[in-house]
Length: 108
Image (tube, rainbow, N blue to C red):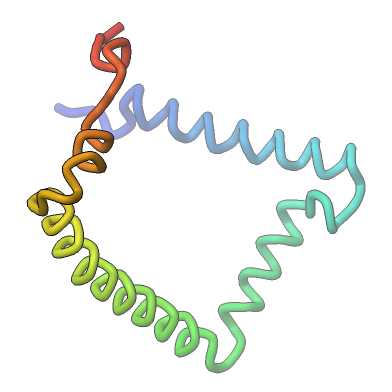
């Protein structure tokens, strides 16, 4: 029978709890909502934000716009990169782009 909670999941949960505790301690130490807001206040603000009418529409349109711009940039950069690699006048730039110091190739 397989255990539900493995070491990896336990470590993940403990690290999340540790980060939340560290966040809370820093928020108490700084005591400035502009510098480091309290985790509870941040959670409540996110809940209120999702409850606002039209929020999901705005968030969805932002994601769609981001995807559109990603596709547009890929449609430009791949042909431009191929041109740079294949064009003879850009041979110097091509050599520079593939020059990696030897110590970066060695594995530690």
